[in-house]
Image (cartoon, rainbow, N blue to C red; front, side, top):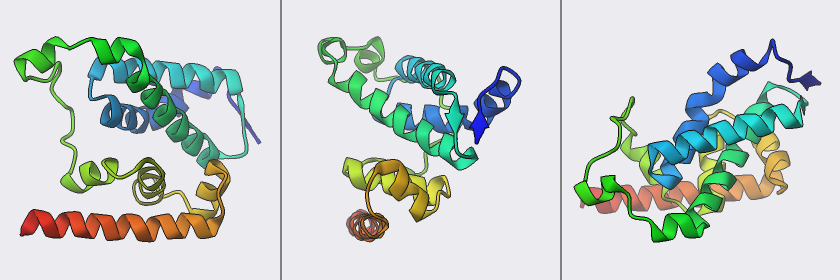
Amino acid sequence: MIYITREDFPDIFRKHVNTVHRIAFSIVRNHEEAEDIVMECFTDLISKGEFSDEQHIKAWLIRVAENKAKNVMRSARVRRNISFDDLTGELSAPQEQPVSEVLDMVLRLPDGLKTVMYMFYYEDIPADRISKTLGISENAVYKRLTKGRRLLKMAMEEGNA
């Protein structure tokens, strides 16, 4: 069992902050909103405080970041506001790392597929851990991976045609 302490928190933050930000930004497409979501995720992490292992922390953060980002996108504030960036066609801050085309395609998949594909391929979380984190069977994880790969293949073939 891992307990989040003051001494451990900075290391955990450094290890997972980029992943959490990437997930949040891929959904909200706004750096300021993504940064707010990152802070909320790590605040919640401190509140939860107890995890079975390092992979559990990572999977939990991924899931929470995705849910918080979706909540932001559903909020009335986001729907009725148009950002200055959208009006000018520029990003508010330069991206530190360009998002790969494949990752961008993965993040455009339907929610259930996107989460499983991201956790499995980009975060190297094993299928059994994904199934426990998402509350689905391990067989469902493999089915979603198969369907996600098929959709990615079709999208790539369309792009090359």
